[in-house]
Image (cartoon, rainbow, N blue to C red; front, side, top):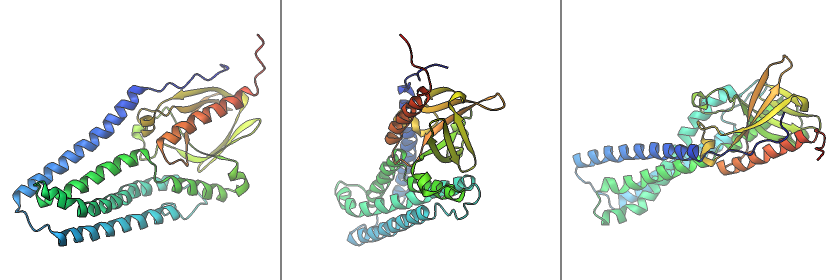
Length: 302
């Protein structure tokens, strides 16, 4: 077992390829939308897109925006319709949160887009654009910009935090114990993240640092890692995950199991809002685990 963890190797290639994929997918979708709308507008005469139409757009946008905000509040305060915490909840949450991640942001995006179109449309009309394109451009523009924002910002952070806390309370942990834990997800690095449905983590829970062991309590499994069982701390980027967009280098623990086999556990910081904050938290977690591990090693004699 080595005495020091190698420094994280951030792959600029993976970061660039990830962003090119995101931007390329967004660009292709936007181009197809404009192409479809241009075919539609050339086949129909330009109608009346005056003040009355702008007012209608504004109220349509307000309706969608309010519906999206109310939907978000409902998802957060029901932990995405999770009501029974006496058994594992993550498997059912995946599908519900996947649907919520489509419907709720789309309502908000459409609301902002329609309301923006009500103000921008007269300007675009003055530049010679047709009535249809003059409100479609701000609508689709808002969809593109907000979609890119949601790649970096995790709007479902409150759901995950509340879900973990309620599940662990149901397993018998107290609020005092939860206050000392670190929100954490785990996954198997040997399985491709491309094959995961919406959420890479196989389990969500909390990690505690004890002088003699690391203690993990999760939704579906609990375990401890003694110092002598921690064989190595690896650092590796997951090119198939959005975490690679920020250059996050995950911590992977090589752990000796009681039956003699080895297990590799990839760690995921939870409860954070942005990819950037997750990257910083992952580096801090690696240092914390390394310091905990080295505390048991004898001093090096020069």
